[in-house]
Length: 409
Image 1: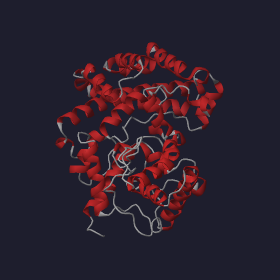
Image 2: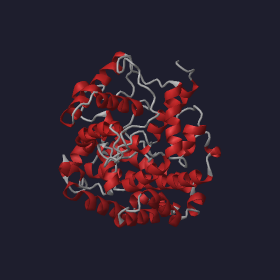
Image 3: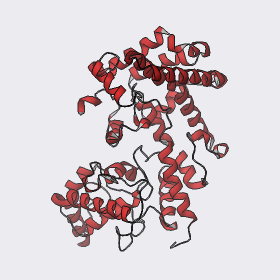
Image 4: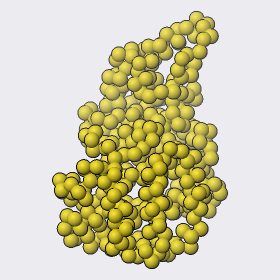
């Protein structure tokens, strides 16, 4: 399996985040066929920090600490903690399904055999929102938990020494809502008013200048949209968020043509006439968008764009940046964009990028890899980048609905 991911040119931080998504690489929004994921994820981190592409529902931000707190209170040893936590998370899957939940249940199919635990999927977000106070990964947490118990005992005896890791005698935020007495029995995704308010406050306190904080603070329930710049409250967004979204939209729209051309080249190579016709049509539609928005693209401050990306990830690989800038030379010229499917230089750019990223697994050169692409449906990352917007809408909707509930409802 590992050799299939050798082309992912992420920084270490983003590489770790991508591990959360490996089991869902079939989801088109997570695909990064041309190696621009560092940029996509940097923008996403600025807009909606703490949310990733495989999170499902907001109440998992409470389920996980409740499970871990219970195990801590039982003084489960380091040697047993991971196994006990897995059992508890499997119990949660069963409890959610028994309660009638289905949409968003992590492990709904695999149940007790689930490979990717909800705690792993939400671990980074829990830290980002200040719900998890322990400053380390899960494996570090498991190894350290015996020391944590010793620190608790020392605190009770008046030892003023600070622990080596985490916050003094506490791994979880002090104001975390109390878990239901029968948890996980009867568990559901419905947030109480107290729980929803708590999550809103965590977001607003920890990442206050973000789109996510605006939605948590001032958002209103609304119909779902495909992209954050389509939100009905867009006109109310603070200026700096509007600026970030302007960069995000231009990057998303312009780079969409690159993945469409890549897939067209694959369809031609595979002699898949139906796919080839469909992708030519989609490229034509893309060129129409670029032409219609030519005035907006003409005012795109590229230095400002790269500065925005650098705020979240200052280590975007130089070759990734050069590839993006080379593609924009085709995409931002409406006349060139209109005939990009036949442009030899544009095709060479795409082919060389794939060869650089995937080496011997490049589909344009490797017949077996091409056949796998075709048998898998014949599309590779053709969705336009939405910057985790689908997951963000679900999680913020959970929170906003919860806040409207009466206490104890």
